[in-house]
Image (cartoon, rainbow, N blue to C red; front, side):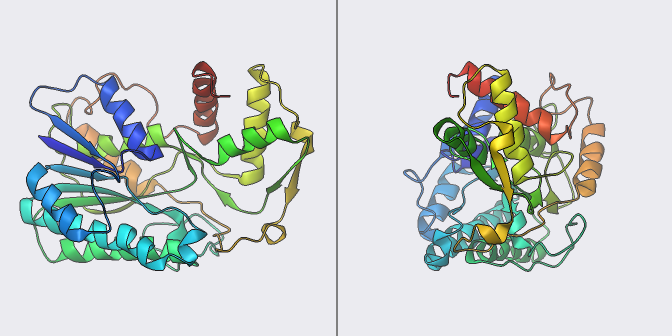
Length: 324
């Protein structure tokens, strides 16, 4: 079994590295991590050459162009990384009967729906970043529909945080510097732990013998339980860090809720990023029932915990690492 993780330097790529390091990886399972320095995803011929040399049975593509605002002026670069490169991975997977795990985003939707988005809802991205990610989804689906070989899962997720820069760490940095913060209150979604996302993805892909699960190829919404706003998330982060004894200039009461229109940005954001996870819950129940356990025999926590518990766990980890 050869596993290839692309995008090793991002939040999700680092989460996969930490996860695999924490597990007892069986002999015969080879795991390779590649970042931008080792694999230029803007050059399809380089990517295909690396895939043919590595011969992965499982491709985990955590790499993405995620500079939402810069994408408005770097459209070609965004499409090269978010659409063309995943298409090449799909072509390899179909050719060699491999499994592809790819990650997409709530930005493929316009956010105008009043309820939770399901996988079959129409894509209608607002900006270049979302359009490039939507194009990647379509490209992967098209490649696999032309063949019965291989399988794929596209995990749509939202508001990811982990090791590296993210909204939570930005808020805490600003809360140390300023006595008052202004945070958007009318955009809704689900904060997603990169560690949780990596674990849950592998629950679908691997069994207890570290062999590939057979699952229904397609798009899966992958976020923890619950929902919140950016303002509520900021308040929770500040409140919990204060409980941990970390001094901050900003207090919860001084985090002022504002409307998205009061904080204009170059690229539009979806107002509603809430996603229904019933499809993934059903698939995981099905795949985990095929064997006594998943790849991780020690996993005993709920598969879809509440988002706020994961954020509190993340903040505790930051404190332990002296990163608060």
